[in-house]
Amino acid sequence: MTTSGIFRYADPATIVDSDVPFVKPWAKVDTDASSYARIAKKKTVANVRDAPAGDLAVDRSGFALYNSPATEKLFVDEDAIRTGYYAEVEALVREKLSTPQEPVTKVVIFDHTVRRRNPDAPRQPVQQVHVDQTPGAAAVRVRRHASSDPAETEKLLKGRYQIINVWRPIGHAASDHPLGFIDYRTAKLEDVVKVDLLYPNQPGDPNVEVDVRGKEVLPDPTKAQSTDGYSVKGETYTVVPNDTHQFYYVKDMVPDEALFIKCFDSRSEVQPGVGRPGVSAWTPHTAFEDPQTPADAKGRQSIEVRCLVFYGEAEQ
Image (tube, rainbow, N blue to C red; front, side):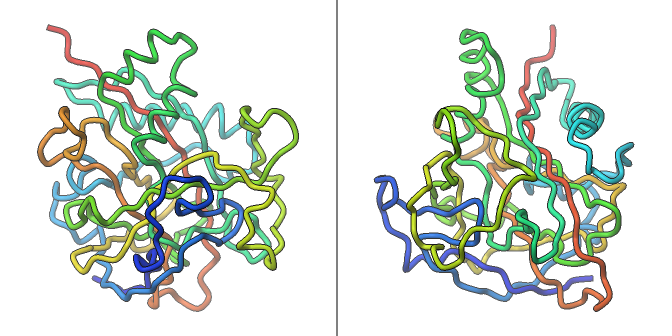
C-alpha cells in the first residue's frame, strides 16, 4: 500500500556555489533556518513492507528494516542508553552487516539523538530531505572517534568503513510524521549539495565537543537568518529535487523494529579509485506528514544511533 507526502527539498535556484564559510550553503542545527530556500514536492511513497524479499538492502537501496526488540523501552536515561542500548545496537550491526568475505571488525557509536514531537521540544523530527554526512565529515568522525592511536586511525581510513544510523520508534508506532527515505538507486550524485552545519557557540574550548543534548533552548525566531553566535562544526548534504526519486517508508513502524540508514560508505560506487559498482553511497531521508495518519495518532518519538562501522577481510 502506498501513500503520498509533501517533501521539502533545497531550492537549487538559491544554492550558492562557494566554499567560503558563511557564504557556502549553511543550515543551523538548533532551528529550521538555512542560507537557501526550500521547495516542496509531492511524491508517492512506497511501503517497505510491500517490497519484494531481498530487494531492499543496505548496500543496494541504502537502507534495510529488521525485527529486533530492544531491552530499553523509554530512552529517558542517558546512562542506560549509552551502556545497555549501545551494546545492543553494536551487536545488531555486527550480525546484520558482517559477511564471511568481509566481517565487521569494529563498531564505534559516536552519537545518538532522541526526538519527541511536541511544539516545545528542542529536537524536532527533521523535515527536509538530507544526508547526515559528507565524505569529508565522515573522515573527521573517524579521526575524532575511532582510535586514540594515530597509526590505527590511518589504517582504518584506508579500509572500508561506513556510517550507519540505526533508527527506532519509542513507545508506540511511528505513524505520526514517519521517516521517509529515497532508494539510492533512484538518486544521482548531482542531487546532493554540501552544506556547512552551524552550531551555537558554547562556553569553553571551541575545538572540544560539548554534549548539550537535553539542555538546548529554543532560538529566537527573529534572528533565524543571522549567523552571529554560530560556528561551522560539521558538513552535511542537502538534497535538490529529482523526478526519479522513489521514496519509501515503513507503515506503522513499531519499537520492536530497527531501520538501518546508510550515510556514508568508503567503498561505494561514487568513491574515486576504490568504489565498487552498484554499492550504495547514502540514503537521503526526512520526516514527512502522511495524509493517511489517523487524527488521534500519538506524536512520533524516536531514537537514532550513529555508528562508524569498520570492515576487515576474511582470514585465509
